[in-house]
Length: 226
Ligand SMILES: *Cc1c(COP(=O)(O)O)cnc(C)c1O
Image 1 (spheres, rainbow, N blue to C red):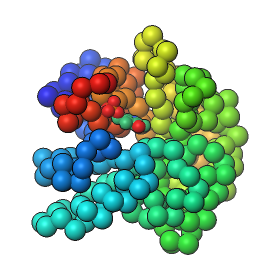
Image 2 (image 1 turned 60 degrees about the vertical axis):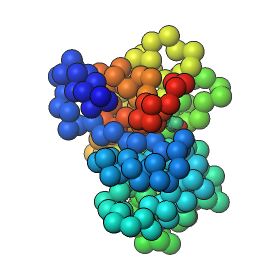
Image 3 (image 1 turned 90 degrees about the horizontal axis):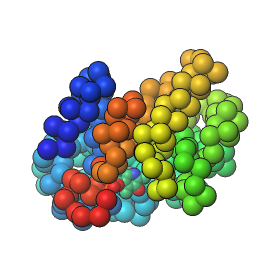
Image 4 (image 1 turned 180 degrees about the vertical axis):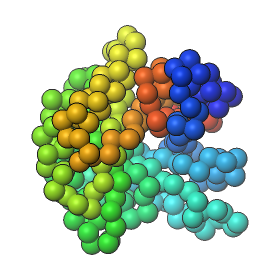
């Protein structure tokens, strides 16, 4: 059902379905339910709290017959610096880089693990004060400081539509424009291939504005709410 809706949104905007990855957000469910999602073919899973990420990673790694090495884990919530090491250790993508200080810590941890971590910069596009992410006008500054951190590979931006925003599309369009501006300002210094935007309630609008990763939780598990 979700796949069909994604196809329609891709058709409407002239995009290829393969360009949009569904990340199953498992924060509302237990490890057994997350495992079912993997068995149903969803290989990208996301969590917003470090503790829950670590627990599910361990549980799914231990699950019998689990294709765990093919699961790509995403972290989408606010990351405290003291939880960075364990969180990035087995991560496909960190969506929520939201300060230079966090970036410096993540870089130290990536160095000590001997890895390069893929990350997105989270932008507060709606400008709502209680939202996470950096403000749009700080993006060039943070990218400037990130360009010397060799073990962090920036591959795009992440954002959420504001609760007060009447049409989520306008916030998604802002993120898309920021990506374009970044590309023209920094050229090939950052890959900027990805826009992580769109959730259960607004993923079609996000796809029509260029999203490459939709983060879907409640709709997958048919929970009411969003
Ligand atoms: C929970 C969460 C989602 C998924 O939200 P749903 O509305 O349940 O699909 C997406 N992104 C972030 C950052 C989240 O915290």
